[in-house]
Image 1 (cartoon, rainbow, N blue to C red):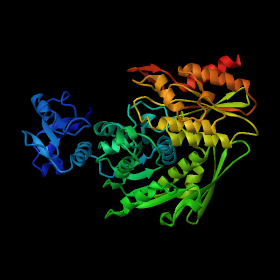
Image 2: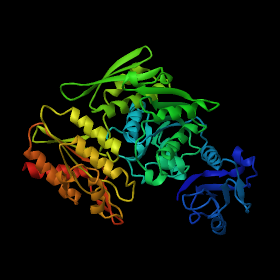
Image 3: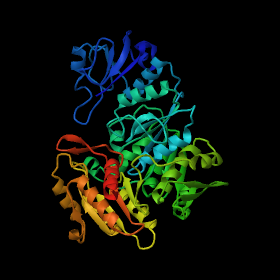
Length: 505
């Protein structure tokens, strides 16, 4: 439930409201919470997961709301009934602020993995010191900065009115471009309807959120909704993903098909239907940096970056494509990309004893864990070993737990299974379900307490050989751990730093 304050405006001054008989009165706020209204508040009646759109209309009227905005509602005093209430809300916010419809544009990034990194990279490519870019996503909201010190927002994609409130703050701060992560939950719940999303970016599709969507088909259908939004003018798809074929069909079925640009790290895996395509060829330099050779039409370039791993090469290609599709040149983007780095909690590295590495990453789905472990394995010198500490969240898709156990067993030399965010579940029961996917579960160590698990893993790393590496996976940038209804302070990065200091003393 949310509220947005707007400059005082008469409802009949907004064309889309005047044409449907809006009352001749002024409002200074919009709220979708019937408990948070007064005589100058427009109540926005919207459906929720648990209630229909008209569930709280009577309460809002009784509490004195100036009017009610909704679609297909039973007639009530002060009702403004429109076919697309989200579009009417957008007109109201823009009209009240005197903003031209094209004053700012949003790039929306969706996919199972990579949303945060791709959004961060797009904002880095789009922004400049005197040209701020807004960011909304898992790391929070704010104007882009290399270290991504943002204000927390709760959900990856906030609710619709919260989105308008955050966007309004950014536009007033000078942002004319905003990059936001758009989750499958948000797309299925209408949290981005009516927003001026001009560019949609799809990264990949793996297993996640089946507890909510039910199966892969419903999950993909939710993602595909991004590419049906009427405001969309450009689209970027990962040509190497089979799911992109479905999204191409969605785009081609539109009367106003957006401009499409695909990207692929492996040129040979991009189908003919995705040509022309931004392609890349990756190699790792002797000092551990990535060198990415990119090609688009007749333009070519080489990017050397601190980003690491195949999946980050794909993330960078997605970000480049998102800027190319709006008309920027590859030459300019190549120069900017060299300076980019990953956001906090994404392949964030810490050194132990000068020759060993601890990597903290947000990987919390099967695909993400496999991608990170595979990338770290590729970069290991000689006979160095790779360890992993990980768990799975409670009250979420249980089917991915044994899958992640099998991946850790296959790709790591040793593993410690621990708690992630157990929420209301028994942490040990979650661990048992993870271990059920392992062929030899007794070979994996179990340490329920995450702090102790990380400490023991770093002690084991310290006792190992030069070049060894440890992945601490699942929580990344998070600064809390959800246990039995409480969020306790916990930051994998701080725990790693402390353990390294203690073990090195």
